[in-house]
Length: 517
Ligand SMILES: O=C(O)CCC(=O)C(=O)O
Ligand SMILES: [Fe+2]
Figure 1 (cartoon, protein in one colour):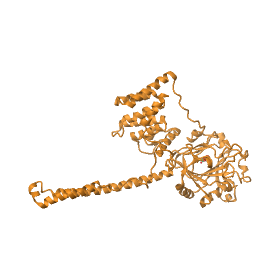
Figure 2: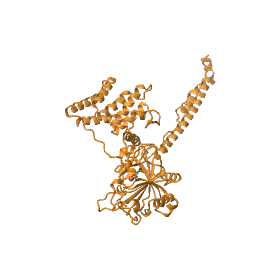
Figure 3: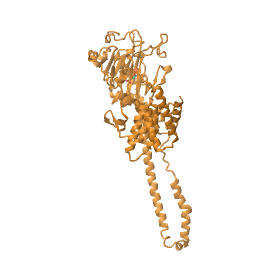
Figure 4: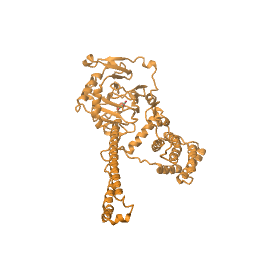
């Protein structure tokens, strides 16, 4: 215990980046909001441009003044006495020293009144900075991305960005140390070290890199390795007190382990097929998918007889179907445009007990039918597609995911203890079904996956996914557990239309699902 507390004390000295509490206007949880930051940067660059232009003009003016002053005394060097004996010259000398140079000095001291930052510049917080790096860590773990490849600008074999410098790898490593992603921090700090040794211009010292590297190694239980690098630090600075202390602590841990065996690492949560499905690794057997069909859906309304939907079955039991071309690009543009300014960090839970959760990193906006004609049109279309009465629909929930944005496996229906009414404030019963429109393609990642039944659906702009959440007796169907996989590349937009139990009594499309419906 004592060993641990000394280590925490040391950590206090090491960490440079302060943690802020939750910031309401955060940027990392929505790629759409990140666009504002790009706008901030553009404004800053324009201001910098202006400053450079003004300071160049100022320098030019000062140069002219200097030449003029030099000119005034050019005759003085030949014969200073005769020069100064001329009272006009003497007067001008005084004038220059008392007046003219003061004016020039004032001009030199005068700021150019160009400031890069003011209230109009949207600034990310430390929380955003930390959030982006933490999400990058989650993406690395899920999609097996190596620090070495990312530092080269490579994502899944494709070069996407420039190479990172050693101090940039170091910063990522430091933040990951702070978020306790020690294994990843070690990889980034090792990469920083590798790059540091070959970089001609070094923005940080080797000592600084080793400081965090040895810390993360020890926290990860790699005491022997940590000690090796601590000794390198002591070669650089043999009397460095904090490092001598660190060495003592690590040696204590080593002898502790010798006597008691290695420390148990906390096990990672097991989420069943969620992760393999996200990676696209898990495939159902040919027998499992043999009965799935694509067909035209024209049963639920007379309108569909004229313009049937293309329907693809993703699972028969429980029923999950995908409607293709369910929403047009133009409609999508409109929905995104009205939602963007309304985006807020997504919550988890029922309306009275909603909270921000680490299980869901996205931002959303709610659009009501009576506010937007197009949203009403989408409700009517949902009615046509599903045959379920729109009297019990929730408003449209539009979601934009952030860097690495995800939603861990969850149910769209709520579990009640039998006496409580689900979604009491709506008074329309539980969520009987979900229809979700995909409003964007996603370059990499971002699938909707059902880990209990091994089904994964990758977003396709314009299509919609539909499933029933409840069994015919109204109880929740456990097989509908589903989640949104982290977005690796791209900005993922979806819109949820949740449908409740009431008013659907006569409208269940029994023939779609012979066993249950
Ligand atoms: O974004 C997705 O793929 C799924 C989202 C979801 O399950 C939800 O918002 O409840
Ligand atoms: Fe969901």
